[in-house]
Image (tube, rainbow, N blue to C red):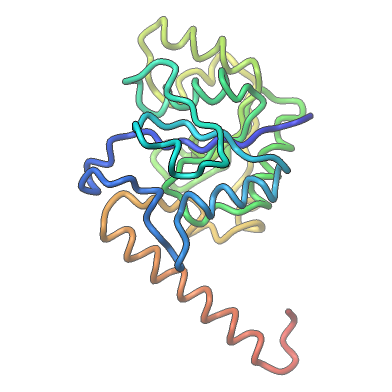
Length: 215
């Protein structure tokens, strides 16, 4: 199947002083650009950008930009917009996750074979990460049903679907599980992300300088 990537740039970034989080840089590049490149590498086409800011079209002129279909619904509203305007099947990624990788995106897209949604296991409170996940066409009506019931949980609509979970063992084989779903929500988070990125660069450089080490 053809799966499209969608970057979710929702939220008011209140903990980041109102500044657009995805335009901050990690490792010398904007988080938005890193995610867009990983989605293109994994899925082969430019992603859709879901954003409500008036200047969003200027962030990446090469990307199609759409606003939330139903504003004010938080994370669930972003997922709904992705499946409605992507349209599904899609892999969505929140735009404050600088360490999401193409192999992880590919695995989530493959997880839609035989399922309506595929989510990775995570150490978060939900046990899965709904803002780095794959959603098929059936998710649209499922979300609409969930909204009609007043359930705004980002995973509340799962009860109407066949959901596949990518186990943490699979996630860890594709990306560092400690960083996979790291969110840049505050200035301290940004500093931590930068430190983690530089540590990865240093580790790779050390491996390349060590004789006999596989590359």
